[in-house]
Amino acid sequence: MATNPQTFMLESDDRSKEEINEDEERKIAEKKRNLLDCALGKSGKDKGPMDTSHVEDEGAPDIEIRLNVSYILGTEPGESFRQILFDAVASRDVNRLNGIQEHLEKYGKKLSDSLYRLFGKTPLVKALLNLKNGENDTVKYLLDIAENMGDLKPFVNAAYTGSYYSGQTALHVAIERRSRYFVELLVQKGADVHAKACGKFFQLHDGPCLLFW
Image 1 (cartoon, rainbow, N blue to C red):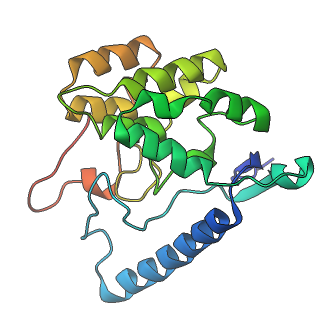
Image 2: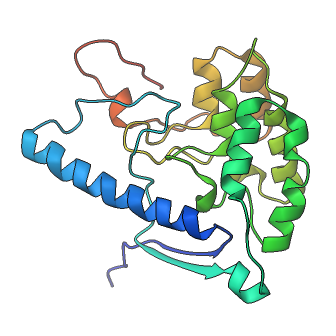
């Protein structure tokens, strides 16, 4: 008997109304851009920077069902938690992550959840893209939260879902940043050393390119 190839995901949803609208607009913009690229024969030629607000496919599953936790609890989610999370790791200020675990536990969320991706990247990847002098204390803080919540391996190995950097994990970024400390830390935490980055950026083409094996 043939199996259904569609993927299914059930998650609670703690996004603000504005954030939900922005996500829908991004998906529509990506579809239009892909159609235009296809029509012009440009598909796969242009690349967005690795850490950017470049609009691209977030790699959503075929079927999504999300429960609006604000409606269930009778509360308003307020400021976008996802944006707070990404701004905090980009700032490298670990104090700005205070209360993150409590929020996740309150809403039944985990750091590996698909809603906590911004333009295809995870908060862990975002943190590693924002090292200063090879350091960012928020990386270990995020790993500790994931470990405390039994979410470590999925979080560490969550791959970039955007079309240009598809398959890229935190370990790939740590290697690209030449950070021996974070490479060793991620491997200790269960990073898959055989993960393949297979997005358009990593495919052979004319000009400079970056490959992970």
